[in-house]
Length: 80
Length: 413
Image 1: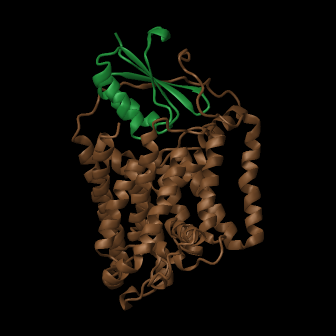
Image 2: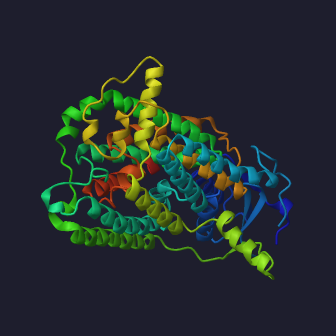
Image 3: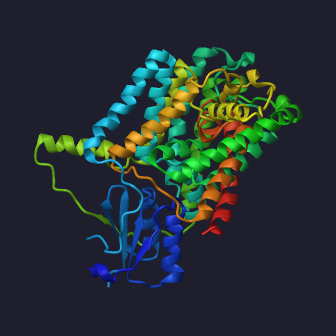
């Protein structure tokens, strides 16, 4: 597992569908293409079922962690 | 995994565990108050609360049913809705057959959502589809997200009120030009209940197949499992109870469970009163607010001849109606569900353009809902089970609108 402090954070709190997913895709495809791991911070529960399948299409695994009530970090990572 | 250090609290996680008991007491207390006002008020409030709770728990989103099909080739929600519609159709057919025994006479059940079918159905559906994608929620979706603490949904609801007000200002024109002469097409009139139900089932099955086909049009990703922290396995009856409670109150329900529960509630409400629909009531609010502001909409023609979501326009007398209790119940039920799931928080959009988007989308959606005589509930989810052609036309038009809406939102990153 990658050290947490090395993982860039994409904060999409306040955004609702489809933006958490679209912005995550943009991050993976354009802003940081090929990034080994990315934490996506969201307060929109439906994003928990839209971001992972899209990330998987790009070859990322996912781990979801509820960091506090109504707020989640989705960690996307490529196994090395 | 630990929390990233960059994470800072944002918004307000308002309620802690000890306050959750209060949250359960809230709908109960409101129900008792509603009972003192009238039995039907209490029933509509109870149904509304259950609908809101169900929508919150299953995160059932009519927008995602159409939008995700376009953006992601993902049909999970649409497939759930199709299953729910099948359940609803069977129940509605049974209810309607007790109201109109012989449909071949041309009589139609008054409260079923058999609506005038014409250009306004198509136009209303397209506008609704565009607006709901822009606003990020349909009318019912905005109601339940209001209860979950989404500030954007409150803004969208303001837009819906403005859109409905604008539609009502132009209603008489639409009525004279087209709606008054638009036919109401109810399958059982010519086909009887049995064949109409089979036809509806076949159309739903074909829609399901088409969704499966469409999903396969995009290559699937390499399935890498989602990892979540696993709780310790249950070791006692108390643990088993906790697991069961967690399944109901904390974890997300499958969309299909939500869709079927909504359909069952719809059938139950129809048995006693009328099918689910939220827009007629909001339309009345828009008119009342217009009157308060000194710009009343005046007399709206033809409303007593229409079922579904136009009918409430004519009531107008008091703020407390069945429809009010239903809509208010949806907000309360979603709030309760969100707090119990520890998901409630004020969600404040940080980009200014999102407020414009919610308001504008709400307005377009409101105008479309008024024109099409209903929203995703009234003109679609209650109309297809009414075995009426207008439900299908509205659904297809809404899908077309969602295609346009999806093109627009991609540009508004």
